[in-house]
Image (cartoon, rainbow, N blue to C red; front, top):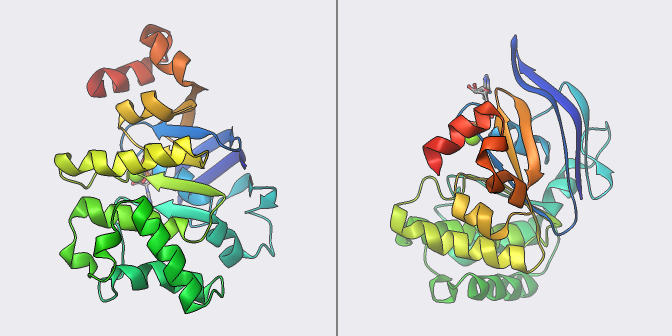
Length: 242
Ligand code: ADP
Ligand code: MG
């Protein structure tokens, strides 16, 4: 579903991604972890072309992200993205947040968009909040709305960039629960997160990045199985968070 081949990217003379390659199969859940500044956000943003790359190739569901002439708005509508900060439109109701791109990008009618919005709010447990504004919701609730908003576009993959790291601890699980449910439903997911409980529960593979490189890319069982068999850099990182 996602193919990342030999991707390099620099900011000026600073190389942020160095020959990164990986694939995510349909229905697979891949967790990306690694120290701050290692390039995780940059890598995940290249998948929907929010960050251009210098060399290499990326494709999503057989469509090149990097080729000239790719219809980026269409591509982005198929790639759901959830960030650390929810980035809901504060002046719109929750329902309007859910409807906007369905109408503007997918051309759905208001009735259709609202129906889909309600279904998704029910799925993330927030049907009662549909006509409130984001400011009236907790951080955990807002992040669940952000997930529902991404799902409203019927994406073929979902990208998450530390979706729980800005939340108060008591709200982390309500967001992870929605992500676990999505994983069980067979969504293809690439998740930057340090929530190793989540990784253990639903990840198929774990990628460990350091200094712009994919240092480890292995099945979860292997990643967590024998920590001593991991690279020195991964061991150091894991010793701090496990
Ligand atoms: P991570 O998500 O793993 O913390 P990032 O992908 O955000 O890492 O950043 C990787 C490195 O690239 C960091 O050193 C960061 O300072 C640098 N970086 C990120 N965005 C930019 C930018 N727009 N311009 C220059 N440097 C950047
Ligand atoms: Mg980041």
